Amino acid sequence: MKQLFILFMLVIGGLTPARSQTGTQQHRIVLQLTSGDTLVHKNLMKQLRNILDAAPTAQIEIVCHGPGLDMLMGDRSVVADKLQERSAQGISFLACENTIRERKLDRALVLPSAGYVKAGIIHIVERQEEGWSYIKAGY
Image (cartoon, rainbow, N blue to C red; front, side, top):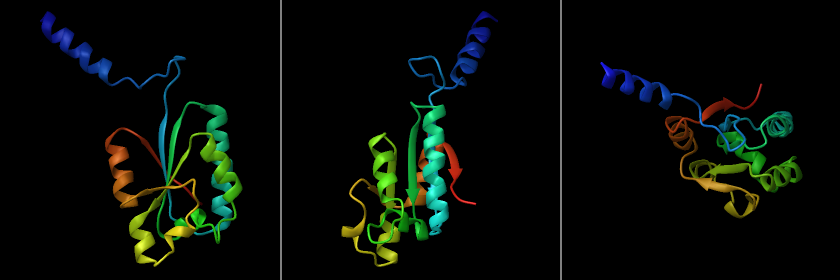
C-alpha cells in the first residue's frame, strides 16, 4: 500500500506545471499565424508585449505559414521594426519552408531575425506534444 501511495504521489507531482526560478509558472507558448491581414500582424505585436509584461520569462514562438508568412517578408511587413524589437526580447519568429516553396517566395526577403521550420503545422504539433500552449493568432 505504501508503494502505491508513493507511485500516486510521483504521478501527481509529474502533473504540476513547470516553475521558473522565481517560483512562477514557466509559460511555453506557440502561436500560429496564418493571416495576411496587416491589422492582425499589428495586434499580434501588442499581444506579445502584453504577454511579456505579464510573464517576462515566457518562451514564445510565432510560426508563420500560408498568408501569415507576409509578416516576415521584408518587402511587405508592416511590423518589421516591432518584430525586430520582440525578437531582441527573446521571441522566436519562424517561417515555414513549405510555404516559401509553395508560394514561390524569395527566401532572401525573409527578415533576418526570423528562423525557419520545414513544415509550420508539424512544428506546432510537436510543440503541443512537448506540452507547449497553443494560440491561434488573429480575429
